Length: 131
Image 1 (cartoon, helix red, strand yellow):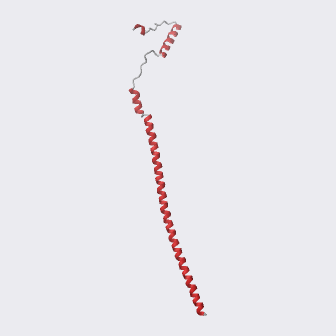
Image 2 (cartoon, rainbow, N blue to C red; image 1 turned 120 degrees about the horizontal axis):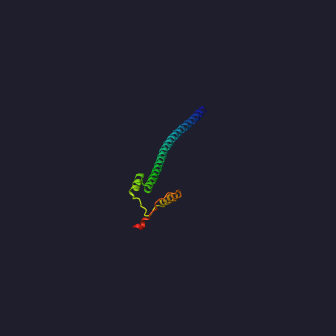
Image 3 (cartoon, rainbow, N blue to C red; image 1 turned 45 degrees about the horizontal axis):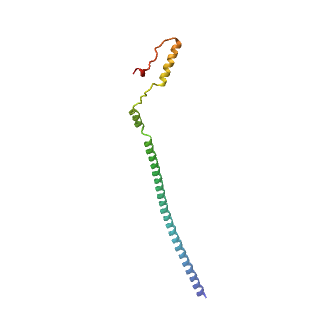
């Protein structure tokens, strides 16, 4: 009977040892899997960082292109101030063929005021009839 108890005890100890060994093996494999998951997360985070950097770069390039296009359109429709001033000086002033209405009004006002004051002034002559 003692032999049976010893054999059963050895059998229980052997099963217990095997279960402990398999449990330790499973925990080691789980730790390895955790390390691999951490490595995969690290690689994924680098990939996400790269994608974010590329998106930011593309957005900055698009903004720069839009600003450059706006500058080109402004240059096309509004020449530079130096170029505009050269254009205005290059144009010849247009000479009016007839007398200025303001000058005629001032001369007539002067003539009326002179008559009212009693000063005699020579009359204005029409040059068109002389030619």
